[in-house]
Amino acid sequence: MIRHILLVKFKPEATASEIEKVRALFEAMTTRVEGVEAVEWGLNDSPEGLNQGFTHAVLMTFADEQARQRYLPHPEHDALKAEFVPLVADIVVFDYSVA
Image (cartoon, rainbow, N blue to C red; front, side, top):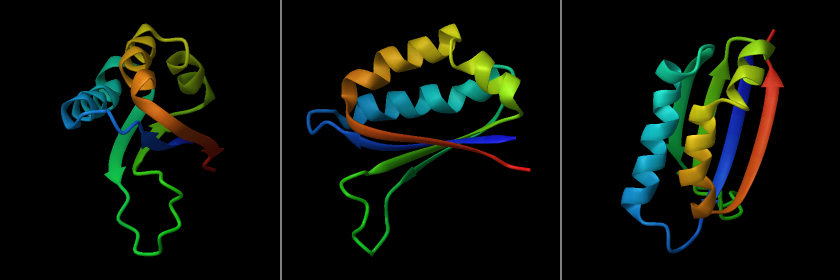
């Protein structure tokens, strides 16, 4: 199993409806790409103030390496990026394997 974490800073001009559309596209991946087992979306609510301006997180779970490799070039991922990337001011992507 592989976890795929995105920490996102949206551009100030990104609207709530645009961000909600991106959320829906991420959450739909479980039904559109084989091996995407789960998607979680969250807003930062840490009281520590250490988020460095990152306001949103996406946690995706891939069944295995083959699922991740299927997702990355998948047309559904490309469609998601077409909506998502223009709204992003900064992003951190971090993947790790779960034994």
